[in-house]
Length: 462
Image (cartoon, rainbow, N blue to C red):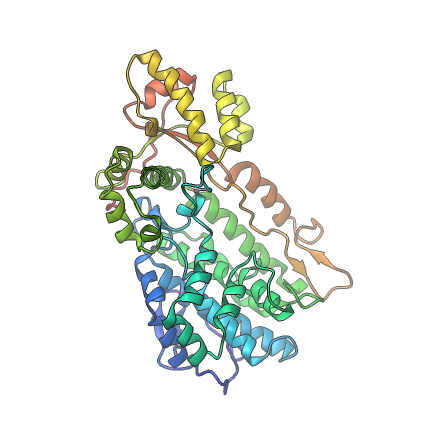
């Protein structure tokens, strides 16, 4: 992703961004002047050195140990390219110097509130009795940006930016701020954003697959422009093919890597371990969310709750990962022969974590009576990959005689087809059981042969 002559912020900006570069995989030399280095040196950003970008994916893909810190630098590097293209095309008509500074600071800080283990903890919904609530990491980012004295000082002194404004730009759910803030928020969080462009290529490189490295980034950036109202990003007609490479890469990465059945099995076990520890009161939630990955693992392994201890041990050396009793899309459930299994799986597909636990607990009680033995509730888990996830297959096409988008089959056949396939096949439900009970539960529910969740590659502990 080598920058062209017009890529990057213009020379002579009030904020000194140019300087001795930081060498980053995929991005190459990332210019890091005093303002950049001052922000990188803050404790909240340094913490991201210990937070893996892909959480537990390294249990399947040994190279997936890159960090949110590396990714943040990559997003900043890609953000520079995007900003440079927009300024070269539009000048200062839509983005002034202060807006560019704020956008690039937000690129560096967009993951500052991220929890350990990637997005796993955020999949825990609020407990119905209020005993557990893990807010979106954007919400925690706001608290850091407004409450960490070091970050506040660096933003004001080195970036001439107000922390509140950076927090508004980072939070994709926010509606606060003026029109320019909304424009910057879309640049960072919309379909064509530097975060997405970076993680697809970076994750592909570290995992060892080609999917995300096939994006035509140079052509895509050369074709990006604002929509007619100036509030969103689209591409010119010449950029449609480049958008299709982005959409296809996203589809493959989610289907084959992010939602790999073994990765999701490990995440389901981790979520149950965390939930048990938080509900038991043996784990302080604030300590957990402020930790990096290794610190979080240590906190969980120190918990006295038997479910947490057993599940964390199973995620360690030797990997006693749970086995798949069922794995498929919701439409596949109807092909199962057993009415009881079909009913259970349909209800699980609509249930949140806490409702699902109740459904499985009731079913396990019947199974325990059937085998005349106690079965711990945490020996049967479920996971729904992709609940509520959308991949933005609808990208505006600007500069034509009428408004169009890639969702139109006359513009792109790939995007509408992948959108349908994504919902039907990439989003999958899994029913998972402890190895000791996998065969018995599968027979009890009338399911097929049990499949091992493991990929067969030894890996270090999470």
